Structures are given as C-alpha cells and as structure tokens.
Length: 464
Ligand SMILES: Cc1cc2nc3c(=O)[nH]c(=O)nc-3n(C[C@H](O)[C@H](O)[C@H](O)COP(=O)(O)O)c2cc1C
Image 1 (tube, protein in one colour):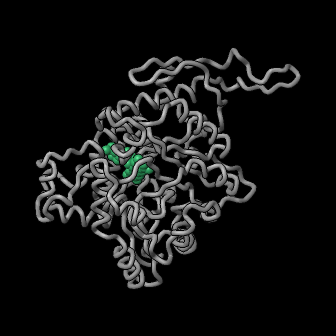
Image 2 (cartoon, rainbow, N blue to C red; image 1 turned 135 degrees about the vertical axis):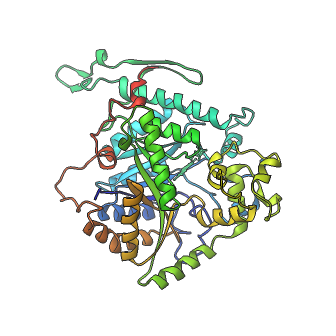
Image 3 (cartoon, rainbow, N blue to C red; image 1 turned 120 degrees about the horizontal axis):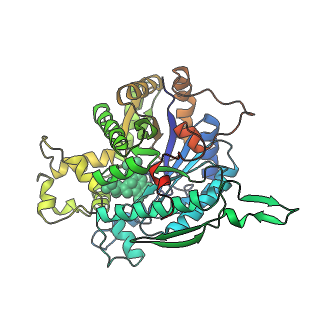
C-alpha cells in the first residue's frame, strides 16, 4: 500500500468558503489570532501531517463591480489576512510540518515572488511549497490593483503564468552555483562573484536582468503545487506542477481525472507518477454512523443557498440569481454571461453526453460541494476504509482535510481517531523518531531529493 500525503486546507478568513462562523464550534474570534494558527500547526506537526495549505486570493466575490452585501455581512471570503506572513512564525514552532502558500501569477512580479519563496525556503529549512494560481476572483483583484482596463482572458492568464514561472525558475535554479556561497572569513569572501550569474529575461510580459539576491535554500525552488482544473489549467499543471490539488467528487470521476493528469504529464515528457495528485476531502466523524450523519446535516444547514449563489457569481462572473432556477444552466451562457473568470465551474457542471443540469441543481450542488472534494461521513473505521478504497480505486497520492465547522478541533479528532487506523493500514508511515533527520517538503511529498528534478521542464527553461 502506498503512503499517502496528508495535509490540511485552510484560509485566512472567518469562514471556510461558505458561512460557518456563526456556529459555536467555529473560529469566529480566533481566525485572525497567531495563537490559533500556532496551536493548529503544532497539532498537525505532532500528528504526522505532511503540510498545512493556505488557499488565498486578493479577491472576494463581487458582481459587476459591486460587493454584494452578503459578502461583508456574512463574512464570505472577507475579510482576509495574508497567510504568507504567518509562515515563519508557524515554522519556528514546528519541526517537520510543511507549508504550502498560494500566490497568484497575475498581479505579482516574478522577482518579488521568487524572493519571498526563496526567503521562506531558508526560514522554514526547506519546508515550503507554492500553490501557483492564475487567481480566482480576478475581476475584483484587477479593480483593486487598477488593472481592470486590461481584460486579460483566461488562457492569456495562463500564458503569463508560464512566463512568470520561467523567470522564477531562472532566478532560483540558475543564478547561484551550488558552491558560490563560501562565507570564508579568512579570505574575506562571502560569495564567489564568478559563481553568481545574471538572469537575463526579455519576454512578452516580463523583463528581468541581474543576479538573484537570495542564495539557494535547501530546496532552491519551493515545491510547486497547482490547482487549475480547466483544460488550460490541467496542461499547465501537467507541465510544471510537482503536486496537483484536485477536488475529487467520486471515485470514478477522480480516477479519470488522475489518469488524465498523468497522461498529460507523460505527453509533456515527464514520468506520469512524478506528478503527485492530492484531493480535498471533507470528513465529518461520529462515534456512530448516525451521529456523524446528524453532524453532517448540521454542517450543511449552515450553507445558505443565497450565499452560495453570491460565491458562485464571484467565481464565475455568472450571476445565476438573475435567471429562473428551473432553466438549464447553459442559459447563463446564452444570456451572454461569459466564463472567462473560472472555466472550471462550467467544465464541472456541463458534461458532454449528460443532461444539462438546471440552475437550481447547479446551485444546490455548488452549495454543498463548493470548493470541496470528497465528502466522507461516518465513524473513524468507516472513514479509514473509504480512504483506503479511494487510494486503491483512483491512484490518488494524498488528501487534504477541509475545515468543517471552523475550529481545528476537527483536525485533532481526525488525528486521534483516523490517523492511527491509517498507520495500521500502512497508508501512513510510523511517527519518525525525534532524532531522525527532517525531510524537506519536496522529499516528503514527492519522494524525490530536496531539489527539483533536473528533468523538470520548468527547470530546463533556465535563463530566459
Ligand atoms: C483545491 C483547489 C484550491 C484552490 N486554491 C486557490 C487559491 O487559493 N487561490 C486562488 O486564487 N485560486 C485557487 N484555486 C483556483 C485555481 O487554482 C485557478 O486559479 C482557478 O480555478 C482558475 O483556473 P482554472 O480555470 O484553470 O481552474 C483553487 C482550486 C482548487 C481546485
């Protein structure tokens, strides 16, 4: 049985994608407190989780330039803090846990992004990963950054992302030779100028000239994660990502998705199994199946349909509230609303050969599974069995636990009840001895060495 990667999916918002902060077990008063995140990171570290992932975006739902009042009133992806600024503090309080932070390729500059992640590679001692996104809620972000006159298309954003990553890779991988940093006080040589090279990139979207001012950390390049699931997003992931986040819905669909990502990786000249595929998973546990089911219903009742429609509109640019619930969802496209903002949602709901769902059906499915993966409900034994079945039938490499009511107590419950069963089934390795060496995040998630493979296309792109 292969060992799975185990992570947690989090956001620096009062809610978890949809409103739960009103629940007594939520983190309404702790989500913006350092102590809360330190406690969460420590519990994951001690339980043997591989990483804590922070989704992030500058945006929040807006509809035609206006913030719907539900967004502010109900705390829907708003307010939000910058997760990257937390990582050093969390790394200092943990010993093995990795951290994956989302940063967009749209409004940032490659040099600044490369510098931040290379710095975090030092501060975390090689426990950092980057979730490379072209960015959700892009219309909102563009307005905030004054870029709303540019009208960049979905595929164009991915073309920019390719070049963005090419510049970052050149900075991380080619500027410093391995033995450039000698720190030799006797010679008075900090680093050998002959071994620190200029990057020279003159591209379509970016120019970057000069040496990288950050010397290489243990991984040089942060572990590259990706989560785009449109066809363009999948091609980007297959070419560049070391790990891909998916939102598995059921075993057959996930198996197809895994096979397709691996096949696209093969077509890009990579070993298919070198791309690790990690699915989101919402787990609701109980001491009996019935108790778990009752908790699941309590959770789902928190998700108001009107709020879900606002999130949907913010993500897709399609305000389904303006159309009849009984109309086919394709009517939204016929009505002239485009899907440039996030093609994934349309890809997800409109399947060739299947009946086109109605707007009401789409919103209900979105409400219960928005931004979420597999839905598991049951006792610890049932959940462990289901995880094993999913690994066996889909070839998935790992899972991320999605928050439910909000507080990290649910992760502690999973750690105490399900993780020992996963270890018994040899789906997770034993807890490492305290004196054993600390693996980098890359070694932990990909099973390779600490550095990005020299066969990796992004690395080979070298100096632009
Ligand atoms: C599991 C998962 C996590 C994601 N996390 C983020 C995120 O943190 N920030 C973001 O802007 N987009 C996030 N996305 C969205 C995508 O990465 C991507 O930018 C968006 O879906 C548009 O690209 P696409 O049309 O190729 O999917 C996530 C998607 C998935 C499936």
